[in-house]
Length: 304
Ligand SMILES: [Zn+2]
Image (cartoon, rainbow, N blue to C red; front, side, top):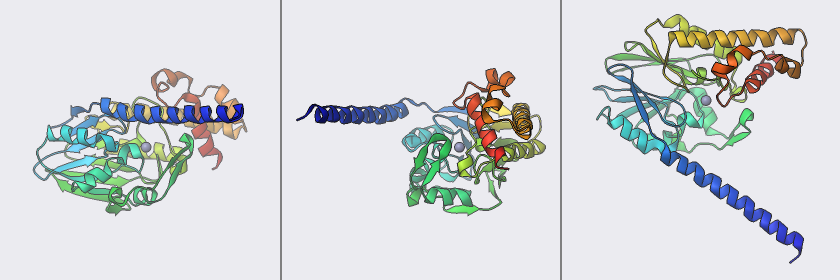
């Protein structure tokens, strides 16, 4: 065998072992995940594990779940829910199609839950998707993972003594976002319209829009009061004040980028002017770094 062939074989073997170890690290990671339960009111809870925050509404009519994280976490999520309520999980509402919010659908659907989401969630989960910002190709979901009830505008669940009002907002984080308002409990689950401790990921390739996120957040702010508890898609439990602070940060950075665009500044010039500077300590420590956030705003606004 030639040296070239030998080197090639070695390179392939190394690549294979890197892939194998990445896959096993990934699954071991799920083994280590612990689901943390936060009681918000007598019948509404938040679960945090890996992926999007889960909302839980419990009572005599059964369990209503908002989002279900990743498939390998289903058993842990079920155990956490059983510790709150012995009732069956009747509904799972997906706030949008991303896998860190819908990964458990197939498991929960097979166990008897009705999966509900906006029309575009089912559409996107039915076909291959490409999340451009992450370079991430997502295959179509199996049939049992797809929402079997979809809605276009809004739907209300009359359960557990509450009115759970679920409504679509114009394209924001994606084009299929839903916000969940537990009216009596005075709790809102924002899905990924709200990252409470970091700059948001706005998925332009799934039809998202920076102005849409701002409008959606603004709309929720008009509905809630100082006592409302706000479950973000990612980050710790928040409230109306926290959501307002996030809204104002988004508006300030958006306006700065927009003004520089009007002055025909390039993306490089805009980034080097550091339009997020005073917010970076509080918001820039997550996986969306300041430059990435500015790029998303630029890329979105430059088209308009
Ligand atoms: Zn998302």
